[in-house]
Length: 164
Figure (cartoon, rainbow, N blue to C red):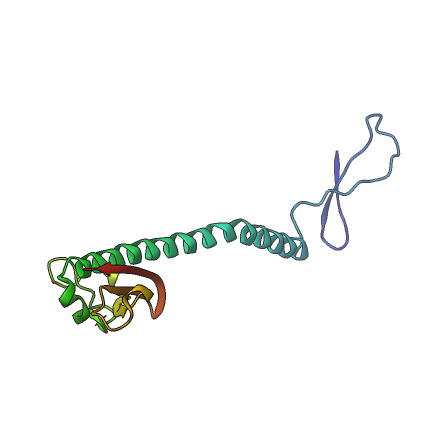
């Protein structure tokens, strides 16, 4: 192989055929041009974005599932607390509200864990009259509705009919 230096100052490699005959020169340049490098970066960026998209949406779904699970647990706890009071005192929970960040645990204290920071709970109670009662008698059913909100949006609602 021979190396020739052109007038422009570039070095080029010259390859000959095996027989060393007068085959045309083949230039061998090393490296990428700027345009080729930019195109490779764009293609790799698009491929990386396509690969990362399922992971980000999966993380978002996992977070939403965790919020719904905690919300169901909080709603169930409040419902059990209401149901285990005497029938006469259940109506005291009508309009019950625990504002965001002030959700109480079973001991009566506020949850201090950051997972509970954006949760709020509310309960509504109303008497239910069945047609067989005739409306004049004292009601024997109370409908209890417990709603749990996360960041201002209702994520869990539980209804229960309580009797004497």
